Amino acid sequence: MSLTESHPPQEAPVRGRPRSEAVERAIIEGTMKLLEDGVPLAELSIERIARTAGVGKATIYRRWRGKEELFVDVVRSTEPPDPELPGTSMRDDLVVLLEALRRRGLANRTSAILHNVHVQMKTSPRIWAAYHNAVIAPRRRLGLEVLRRGQQDGELRTDVDLELVHDIVFGPMLTRSLLHPDAELPEGLAEQLVDTLLEGLRPVSSPMV
Amino acid sequence: MSLTESHPPQEAPVRGRPRSEAVERAIIEGTMKLLEDGVPLAELSIERIARTAGVGKATIYRRWRGKEELFVDVVRSTEPPDPELPGTSMRDDLVVLLEALRRRGLANRTSAILHNVHVQMKTSPRIWAAYHNAVIAPRRRLGLEVLRRGQQDGELRTDVDLELVHDIVFGPMLTRSLLHPDAELPEGLAEQLVDTLLEGLRPVSSPMV
DNA sequence: ACGATACGAGACGGTACCGTATCGAAATCT
DNA sequence: AGATTTCGATACGGTACCGTCTCGTATCGT
Image (cartoon, rainbow over all chains, first blue to last red; front, side):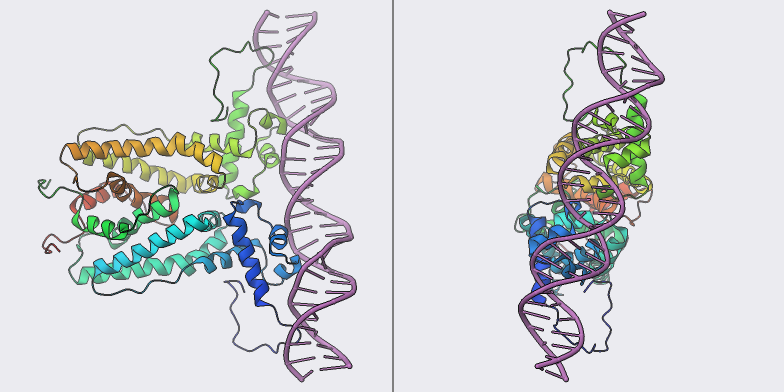
């Protein structure tokens, strides 16, 4: 069930008792509960997860090769689906993307899961790469695509690097939701952010340099 | 020598052999070396640090209460001093602050220390709070002060929340240097960022909404 | 019914680390 | 010289986890 495992299309002739999906959920949710309770990922162990989930150790090893593979699935199970873009304008699309980011930040705040897992997963470069490919990269591609269309439609300056614009748009929200946990994520922040960025920080009456 | 330890002003009547500062540096640099080599912080242990530094375990316990306290000092020793602000304009001050952030990001890249420690320290709320108070909060105050002066001098719109502006200015650089390790931090990024933000992302010919 | 597999529980030997204590040697002050 | 503390090294008992394996039981297809 790991992310890296490619499910072979040929139907295996399953015999004997099938694996319980309920048990699978119990393991993942048990891990999440531990993380919610503030247990640092360094102190997590297969044995402790098994105890929390009320499960035998072998049952976990039957499904995942180790701690790391399990975490990828835990994180993936907390990732909300990508939002649908209205497509009416670049501005509206960006607002929707940022709003999804804000809501995820709020969810992280209450559950405190990603704030732990996200941050810890980078210690294992292999797993981080898998997560990056599966979650982060597609999301970044989506954002860049929105910006590219915005340039075509004249909503965005064409004299600035798109990668830089991407970080300008999403960096502030990422900083708030991931880096300082005590920041506010108020309603309407997404619109406020996009409109401020489009308009610029300079006072309208200010002379150009 | 921990951050939390308040050095009492009264000079202790030191007798016997004094503690070696060279040993102290060896411990901190040994820890940094391990982190540079990609050893995840979860796998660090006092015993391993002592081995790497060529030091007895007791010598470490004589100075720090445990792993966590040691890390705070390790991180602090890698923090460069705050840059001096030119004070000629808000724009120039922001560029200097962002340039310092960029250089720190590059240093992190090559040394790979903060990228490990920084991220892991959040698992210990107590230590994270200490680090936040000692390093992050003053830096944020400095940035906010620069922005406040900018508003007074007419370089910055007055109709936007300063906290939001702070994240708009520093969020992109923080995202690049901390969140995705494969991003570029080219020369001139600080100026490019500030000027783009001041001017806005909208094309100059675009009609106001 | 029967064979196959999954289940919870836990035994098993092994590894690594914890934090303390003790050793003789070295360094420093009075 | 003598007292005192630090030094590296290492022994110590204790804890937690690793990954495998083996129980007896439960649950499935045939």
